[in-house]
Image (cartoon, rainbow, N blue to C red; front, side):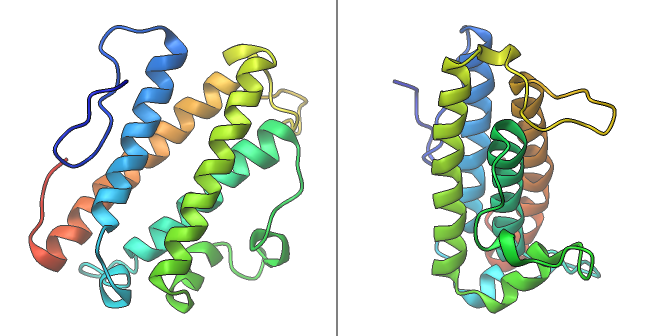
Length: 179
């Protein structure tokens, strides 16, 4: 059982195997996003900082897309799930960010939470089917495929980068600061 910090985040293990360490950091960053978006209404999830159009609501939807894209589409070769299956990405490559303004906080949180739950199950399945070395079902144009290890590190990187943005956005709303 992981230690839980004062914001409700599971502390990554200090001395564990590679899989537990990677998953520990990914869960920590997922929980950080949950903390940064907690208790916010439509206005809070739609607030921007400076000249940026980035919002916490857009971040929730974008990270739901990232989870689905890497864990479902790439890792397991599945077709896109709703709402991604009907998006014209060529017309708006940032649809995930832009369309979040049309969603309620409940819809955004549910989409992200459901996608994270699906990703967890898909990662568990891939770990049982080859471990961190398991290659994605989809490949780059040259035939190479990323490993589950690469996908997990990429997810940690994606969350870490956006959690930095989340810090700025949340602080601008109500002064709450922290990792």
